[in-house]
Image: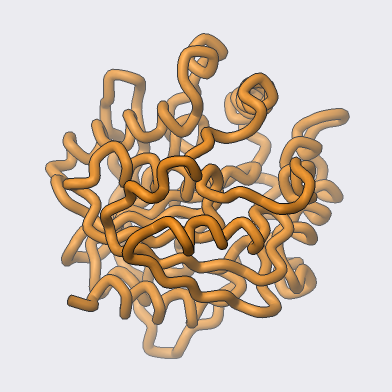
Length: 291
């Protein structure tokens, strides 16, 4: 990914773990030292923990032990079957796998950050294990959001289209990035790499199963019904121009979460950690280090 770095920024060493859970293997990248920060990626084609957050590690890893899980279905983690997705939602599966993986890594309490699909898993984890989540950062999270406009949104439609029809193409990836970001020309040099990352055959098979399950369940889990039960101090980060998880849906979380603050970025779409990288890193570091 393209990122802007100061000359003295140091790329941290990254360790990769393959963690066994009762569901299957979970791949987890690790960097840095300090209080644990778990960062959950979104659900775009070819997404992984490291791919989505690598550019942020030089700023965050000096202050935190960063854990970057590949959620079930993505990257190096196992692929849930059709039966798995019929029995439980992808969010329920991810929470189960995540907590087991953290147990295996000896992590009891942690800060938790999630974007989009990963934001839904972050909300669900904070609800399922409130005693373990110290602080919560949500970037346009699925599930906790109740839009005023029509659904599926433009961004959700772009995700559905990507693997359908003739399958992945460079043009589709370029169109996908156009919808995900407010200034797509800035990210033109990421198109080819993201396209190539989306071509894993087992991931494509999973995505078809996931899209079918999404349709059967009429969308993501309605986590918005329970966000008032979130106990962790929460920072909401949102792009004003997000066309995937639209800003209007933030109002419910802003009203219902007890200890919450919202920061909105003008000229920013769905990928705050990339489009507003420096501000994202500053806000996250400041929020997590506050007493």
